[in-house]
Amino acid sequence: MSTPELPAAHRRRITSTAAGIGVATGAYGLSFGAISVASGLDPVQTQTLSLLMFTGASQFALVGVLGAGGGAVAAVLTAWLLGTRNGLYALSIAPIMDVGGLRRLGAAQLTIDESTAMALAHPDPPAASRRAFWSTGIAVYVLWNIGTVVGALGAAAIDDPAALGLDAAIPAGFIALLWPRLVGRTMWAVALAGAVVALALTPWLRPGLPVLAAGLVAFTASWLVGRRS
Amino acid sequence: MIWAAVLAGSIGCYVAKLVGYLLPPSMLQREDIRRITGLLPVALLAALVAVQTFAEGQSLVIDARVAGLAAAVVALVLRAPFLVVVLVAAVTAALLRAAGWAT
Image 1 (spheres, helix red, strand yellow):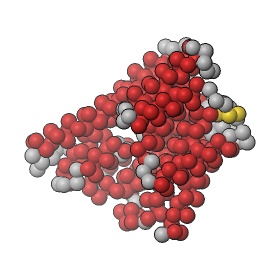
Image 2 (cartoon, each protein chain N blue to C red):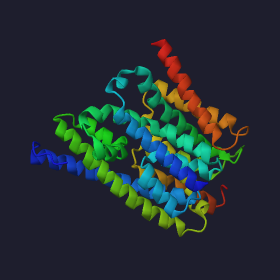
Image 3 (cartoon, rainbow over the protein chains, first blue to last red):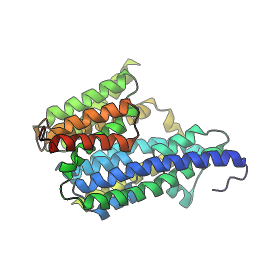
Image 4 (cartoon, chains in turn yellow, brown):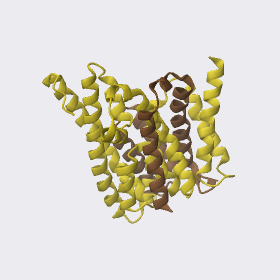
């Protein structure tokens, strides 16, 4: 992780940005911890997700589907599908990261939206990119987990989560994750179609399955866009 | 059952991350792979927003969550950070329930 070829000022700039991102995601970990417990997971299960799964959208989806009574299989599949994008992130930063062995296993766990965005935002020199990745990944990992502990224990102390509007916090969390991705007509169309398909199927399928069915919208849209171009 | 989901979900998500480091970088050139990994989160997250707002088991209902979602959208338009968006939604729903204006 030492990057001696990088000027100190440049290193400091990267580190302070990474710390800022870490603090912001820590606040977001707080809401994950609270929502997870409100969805019926205990604090240990909640913490295990933040330690092992460590990818926000998948974690929210898993607890959201479980909490809605969707069952383990649908919850896991939804989390996996949302997690596939991290594989694409890994693919795009692997040449810059240039890691093997144990460091590769560690880098994989830290490959998420924030660390990838920071690595790609500091392309030159590659040492800056690697430093941006590691510092952001570690800052987010630590603060996300601290946030989760506080949020989970806080929510565990509450008797009636609905009275505090915690059930309304769940869709708000999802739309906050969705919002930055709604760029351009295709994304809006896919989002609307996904929402409509899920709602239309809700009365007919077990909870959890309508969301998975919405995943088929993405595959259909991808095929349509591919055929057009 | 919850533990099985927690562990299976975690393992699968880790494997997805790791696979990216093991595949040849040329996979990145494949337009279809880039497209679907961009579109999947959008469709799934939108479906989750819809279901978590309107579904109660297998029935569709309109309750305080809708107002919470509307408040969240306003907060997002005003560029509020994540925690504020979530808090605004929760507080809106809680206040409407406390006032007896929504269930």
